[in-house]
Amino acid sequence: MNVLGLEGTAWNLSAALVDEDDVVVEENAIYVPARGGIHPREAAQHHAEHMLPVVKAVLDMAEDEDLSIDGVAFSQGPGLGPCLRTVATAARALSLRYGVPLMGVNHCVAHIEVGKWKTGARDPVILYVSGGNSQVLALRRGRYRIFGETLDISVGNALDKFARRAGLPHPGGPKIEEMAREADEYVPLPYVVKGMDFSFTGLSTAAAEALRKHDLTDVCSSLQETAFAMLVEVTERAMAHAEKNEVLLAGGVGANRRLQEMLDIMCDERGARFYVPERRFMGDNGSMIAYTGLLMQKSGVEISLAESKVRPGYRTDEVEVVWV
Ligand code: AMP
Ligand code: MG
Image (cartoon, rainbow, N blue to C red; front, side):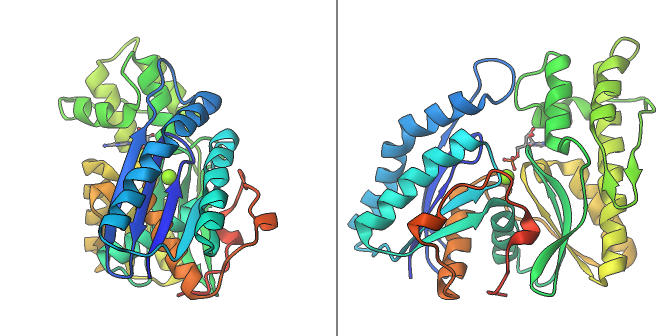
């Protein structure tokens, strides 16, 4: 069975074809804002302009290899409204054109499923950290329950905002990681964990203000140490509550080596296993949507055109995970 998947919730327009075993082909078109952060309407325009070549590359490959298209999946939410609508329109057209089922995929669930698929993690606590979301989750009674999440902006957004104020290019995460390696002093910054939730706005602002008195490299490193310690604390507590002994890292911020190292140490101390997917499956990608669509289709979870309206605020725990 082959499923075509479309991702385009924010910066990456991505189409992929997967079968049960692997990714057959994936094609990407990346939106880079001219200045500042992601502008939803500009990003949607970017996706509309690149939709045809991106999808065509995947379909041409399928045709060359004589592969059938058995289903079409798209990220229905959460994400930026204009971007979601552009992708949903293309997905509806493709499902009609091939006369195959349409699957509306929750973007966060897709990050989790592709991570499990690619690492072999079975029943992990998931730390999902990206440009739009920051959540600690675990599967319980048929849903990925949110044990903790950000009370304001995501950790990726906090890094990107700080980077912008520090004059670093977008996306800020990778640049901050690079600068942090040169640090030699720790700058105390606000550490905000409330119960199982965390907050990053104050931290991002305080870090930007600290630039007046401290070295950029020191602030970058201290921002990482503080933000990541908050995430690791909540992840560890979720493991204890949910009685799980695996951690899966998901989302673009998961590419950060220091975050990986901190989680690795925590897991080691608990005798737990730590799973990190290959870099290409951490940030937004079409393969994760196609693969989750395939799981859904095999379980009979498809939607009608009438049900295919986009869901910008789609919560991870709204999804009934019937395929596990
Ligand atoms: P996503 O939304 O999952 O595609 O992830 C995008 C976010 O990941 C952006 O906020 C980036 O700044 C962040 N990011 C990417 N690479 C790194 C890195 N090496 N360290 C920290 N953040 C990163
Ligand atoms: Mg994402």
